Length: 89
Image 1 (cartoon, rainbow, N blue to C red):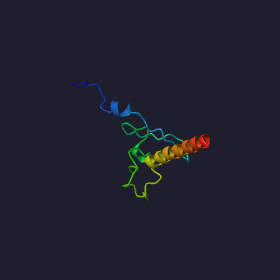
Image 2: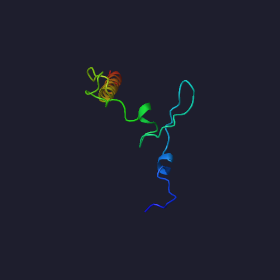
Image 3: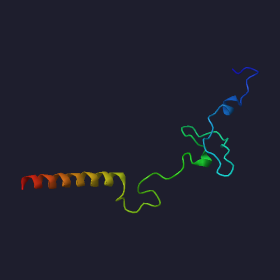
Image 4: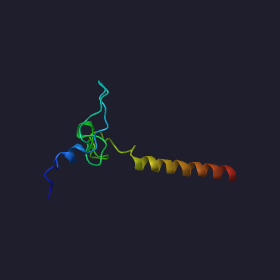
């Protein structure tokens, strides 16, 4: 039960604020930040597409994290094979 002197807006006023600043004025944004984010929905909280084939700019996936890691591993194995071959003769 609420007390008579409790203001229902106290929780809203105590919410963490957006950390973005205006380019024009340099003033901070005063809108409450989205839960789990440091910024409000105007400044990008929860925005953007997920990475992968559903992204609008997805081409082929050859630069995805998995492919980059795979290429690094293959290049390392090839490097080790060349070093081993050079030691053998």
